[in-house]
Length: 390
Image (tube, rainbow, N blue to C red; front, side):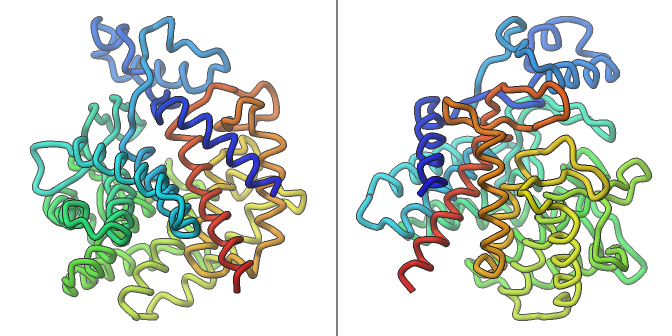
């Protein structure tokens, strides 16, 4: 009941804000970047993003960064409202809200690509590449596709299913590939880069698997398996994965490990192919043994706790729920959520995106923190209520 009460506070905050908000990486929406020569410098763009991301003082109002809708964040809210509808069929407002937000996602499709796809509502400069506003990514698209399929499941409205199914052309035709010697491959983050981020590839495999399920296109599972094979061939003996193949991406972190496990599990469930079951078992064991303290704190990296990122506790709940082992680890989940609520939720209901050893930012980021905890807590509520009736 305590966790549900805190969820209601979060839900009230998000609805009051109408799901619009700031993001840790939205600094390039500032007029300083958009309307001056400084925006032409890769170094300055990278430094400007980090200034906004790391600063506990919110500079956005001063520099003209407005709150906005982020497709990935909206997708997580859609999934959350569908999970609430699943256990509260008499409460029609949850499904209505999910439909309204799903319609907004269809309006936000990025134009000019082979299939339906989605990006972020801000320019983004990473160390490895630059992404202009609206540039579609496999990560954002994967979450949107899951959301649209879930709304279709409850409403049977073909517009949601059709939009989701069109995403396969984007994944198979527009994204760049890195192959291994056996013909397996992973996907780039977007059409503009050639990175080999493992969770990005697996989110593409998850998308293809879900499209195979909802569209009856079994050949998509062949492509999904090639991606799963590529990533599993790079799993370490202890069950862990580095973030990517790049030399400066060799860290091992919590929530991206959770993404990998969730996506492999989706492929396995849809295809009935257990080729990667041992990889999933080893990966889950590593995940649970290396990223969560006994007091409920979630570690960011395998070798250090801070900063504690809100994605870490959120993805724990989602991954264990989707892998159908929630009940097995309910004690751990309760500890993690109670610690997170106590230490990372503001009195106004929203969550902080990171907790650091020193001063932590209390800026309410909608996509990074609120949508993720909304997504996680609705899975939690769904699991608890279903288990209570069994």
